[in-house]
Image 1 (cartoon, rainbow, N blue to C red):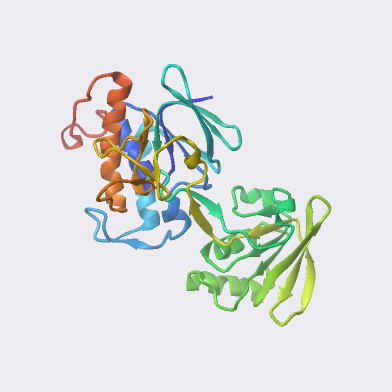
Image 2: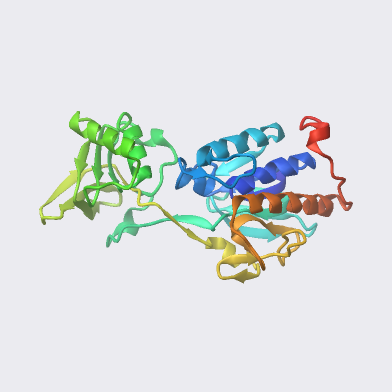
Length: 333
């Protein structure tokens, strides 16, 4: 059982900044995110995208902002459970909570802060007849542990940055790697496209353009896939893993079953402290809604600060005094 003051569901920029604000008030945080790394949308979808509306930064790269937020939170020693999502929340007699992930990790927290952005990012799955038969038995939608694929035969399908990046990385890990893309033009960074094509020219990977995966084969575990070209020709390729990297789509997911007040896939909150209708549970960032809501990172930062002061008062029973880091510095906290 993991013990913490605040369990933050979502390790995007707003959740990471909440760690800093909680730390100033002597509260420990444990963060849970279904993605395999921190950063939320910034790291998963557009790590190189410039952001222009962060105060004090005329422009800052998305991944650079995440890295800076992690550095800012570092003095307060946050802990993380990544690659898992919260499935169940149970309120205890003492008004604390036990949260359970889909992999049965349990977290005991005094406060819950939902900072899930647009919700749980679920994989976009290809329309294959027997896809579910091979999920967790050779078919996967994200890379959690690259070493899992060492000396294995891999087929990667997709045409965006994620597919390109993992193709480049796993080219030196896998025994054989085939990349399949339904067109000729990729959606990813031009430099990544050039590097993948160079790997193909050098014979380090096989690149199948204008093609799709049409069938999966195996006896309980995936053993091969059929690749069908747009001209109708097809061939069967042996593989241990099929990585369908078609991106992620946001869904509210299990949050919808936690007894919270929901309005159009967002959580209603009280703007006094961004609390939900369930005492001890807060929601900040893009996941919440209220009159005048702006879905901006900087607004989520404001909500995180207000939320942490309310949470500290709920835990201790007394209103915390506001101390300024410009006077005390971070180490004083």
